Image (cartoon, rainbow, N blue to C red; front, side, top):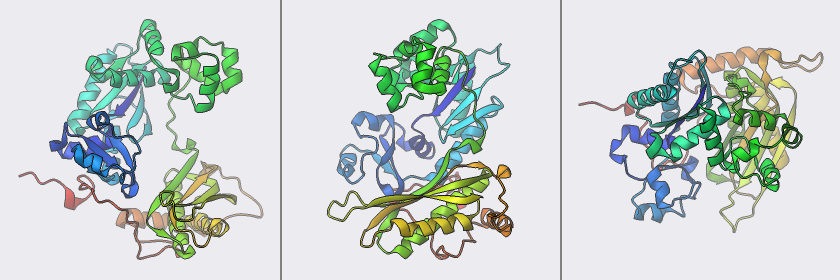
Length: 418
């Protein structure tokens, strides 16, 4: 049996957990630099605030409708996510953290359990210990658990945010309820193929022949079909090194036109990617660097460009990755453009202990020890060590005009009980 646990309106719920006066009040959370809305409470959704709506266009709408707006408080959300995942891990040792607010649980040897009761016990424990409301879908496979979770949330008054697909009858009923475009793993290309065959629901999809699905959607599509049929083919993926890419992208607080400022930002983003690589014992073979002008400034010259760098050897060194990324800026930078956003993406990830050695091209062996010392110092004392092409006096500062306190991660913001 599998379960998909999903935190309801997670960012908004984190804010409410420490500010209960906003329970039942419409709440909305802004993205980096207060750019657009990325999380909305149910009350806000009913008012009609669109997802990803630009903040400057909907400022008056929020004021008129009494919507409480918050800037993204990522330290708080990350810490609350960790707390939720740690509690979930006490209910089963087999868990896959799928995103900051979602996790798959696998229950082996739980045959005697009543899963509806067990799901509600999990739900009550998370609510009691963190204040975060969750929805749980339980089913024999991961794909069905995803559908069960959607049903739990969509039919909340009937399900109480917990729904179990356990019989073949309930599986078929759930598949007929699920539109094909909402099925986990059905991308845009496959959706067009399926619609050409008049496939409208998940149940219709399971009625296709295995041969057609494998030919048109490859082995991944066939595995999804089997999963929806109740035959487990998609197992937990608990190895972070299976991640395809790691990215650090940011909108600048101000626009930058001079290349030196941009290079410094790219160096910082590249170092962040390298740090993430080392934290999961991975190395990369490719780097993507991109620059973007402000598309909302229609009167300004526009420019969007990116480039891919293939490294001579796989690496997790901040020095190597930063140097190549900074060098790549020169290939895409255009003088006179006011750049608002930039980013670095590392790909071609492999486990560091499986790097292919080369007789003639290899990284300076001193890098490993330097990175180890740098990570240890930074983890213990904060970011005290940077590489030379970063601004030593500069810290990343986002526009956060509606930022709440960091209740669980900053000693100065911890709630005082009187």
